[in-house]
Image (cartoon, rainbow, N blue to C red; front, top):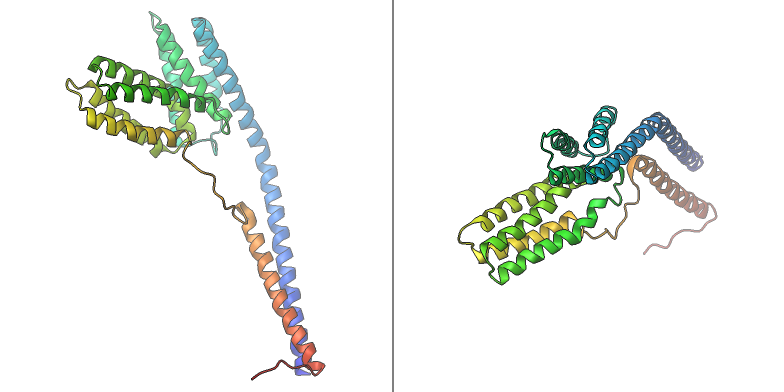
Length: 289
C-alpha cells in the first residue's frame, strides 16, 4: 500500500509539474502576443518615419549636387519637422541621435550662408544622406562601401611615410583621409559603439599632430598607421567573425525553455522510478555485489 501510495503521489507531482509548465508557457506566449500587438503600431510608424527621412535626405543630397539652394532649404525644413515625430527607441544610441542632429544643423548652416560654399554644402549633405541611410538600413548601410576608400587613403599615407616624401605631401594625404572619415562618421556613430568612434577620433587627432610637425617622426607615424589599419578594420567589421555557437534560446522564451527542460527531467526521473517499481513487483531486482 505504501509503495502504491508513493507511485500515485509521484504521478500527481509529475502531472502537477506538467500542468505548471504548460500554464506558464501559455501565459508567456499570451504576454508576448499582447506586447507584440501593443508595439506593432509604434514600430510601423517609426519605420515609416525613418524611411521618409531617408528619402528626403537622398533628395536633399541631389539638390545639393545641383546647387539648388532653395530646394535644399525646403528639404532640410521637412527633415527638421519630421525628426520631431520619430521615435529613436531601439534604433540607435544617444550618441547616434546626437550625431544625426549635428549633421542636420551642419547642413542648415551651410545652406544659409550668404556666399554659398558648394563643397561644404555637398559634404554636409553627403554626411546627412549616409546618416539617414544608416538609420533606415541597419543591415547594409551605404557607409560601409567607404571601406575601400578609407583603406586606400591609409595605404597612400603609409606609402608616403615609407618613401619619406615631403611633409606637405604627407599632410595632404592625411587631410584626404580625415575628410573621408568625417563624411561617414555620423553614419558610423549611429550603428557602432561610442568607444569605437572615440578610438578612431583619438587616433586621427594624434596622427594629425604627427603629420603637421615640421620634422615628422617617420617611425612613430608608421606605428600609428599600422594601429589605424586595425581600428578601421574593426569599424567596418572586417575583423569580426561570426560566432560558431548559437544560444539554445534567445529573448523572452528562455523561461519557457527552462520550464520545458525541467518538466522533461522530472518526467524522466518519475518514469525511471516507475520502471523500478514495476520490476520489483514482478520479482526482478537489480544485482548488487
